[in-house]
Structures are given as structure tokens and as C-alpha cells.
Image (cartoon, rainbow, N blue to C red; front, top):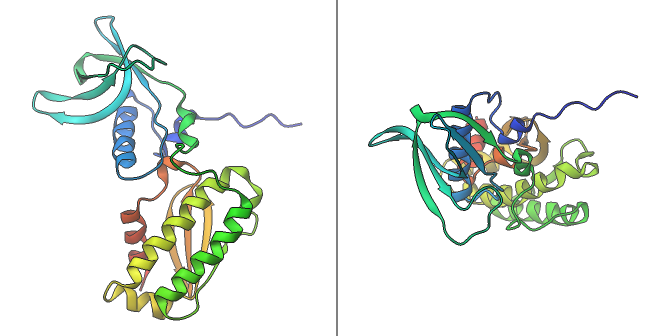
Length: 235
């Protein structure tokens, strides 16, 4: 019996090869912005260890250039795991950071509770509904299917597919009403296939539009990213 593959918690950030404290801070800052833009993300806390020996625990609000230099804004409370009412925002300059701990990074792989729990039965009902919505927007029949036929057999793929089904219906419906892009969609696309893979991408082959979302919620596409990827995939 083969040993299970070791899990790299940093993969949950959906950012590829993240290996330094500053890359983690940049990733967490980006994820805070993506959550504000609508992604259902559970964001883990970080502990920043300072050269003075002090440590601060909280959520990364923003990392980047500020008036007084480069650093991180942390939303802090009473410590890791605290659910206290009082919240502070602390600015920590880059130069005083010695190390960083990212707590429970794999919580990012579970969408926030704001996203309803889905199921294979739910997806089998909603995929035809999405196809009907697109057919109405196109004015011609459009079919939809899950790419390999095995996606619904993997529990880890259910929530990514639920997100992709919902957002594809909304985004492609709006694109169909956009001058020029809508005309190309109606002319070139007759089928939409949905996949879960390592990263998000859109590809048009013959009359089939393939949309792949990441298994990591941190890398799910925002509506603007989905619309841009589809537009770029069209001839």
C-alpha cells in the first residue's frame, strides 16, 4: 500500500510557488480583496513575529506600499482563536518582520458559509437550468455538461462546480447582451463544458467552450476574470 502524498498547505492559497513570509502576506492581501469582490473565502489568521520579540496575530487587511513605507496592515484582536468584540488595525513595517506563521491554511479549501452547500443532485438539476438560461440569451439551443463525466464522483469538486455553474450562467448571459462579443458567442458557441483542474482557464475548440476552475476557492474566478477569459478565448 503506497503512502499518501504529502499535503502542501500553501497550495490552498491558489498562488503556485509561495515560499517566503512576504509572498504569504501578498497572497493574503490579494485574498482579502478577492473576498471583498465576492468570493466566498474563509481567511486564516497569521502571526507575525517581530525582531523585538513581540508577536501579533490577526487577519491581513492589506500588504503593500504606504505613506511611511512598505508593510502590512493587520486586523488584530485578543490573540489567535479569540472571538472578542474589540478589533484593532496595526501597521507593521517590512523591516521589523522576522518570521510569520499562517494558521490553518487549508481552511481556504472550504468555502465560507455564505455559499450554500451543494450536492451532485443539486448540480444535475442546475446544469440544465444554466443551459436553458444561455439558450434564452443566445436565441439558439446551447447544451451544457460536466467535462469528464467523473467530476460529480469527487466530493472536493462539488463546491467548485457549484460556483462555476452559478457564475457561468450569470456572466455568459451578460456577455451575450454585449455588442460584438454577444454576436461571436451566438455564432461560435453551441456547447459549454465545465471542469475542475489545477487552475482556472477558458478554451474554445470548434463550437465547445471549455471552462475549468481550480479546486481551491482562492483561485476561483471573479465575474470580471471569467468574462475576460471567455472574451479572450473567442476568435
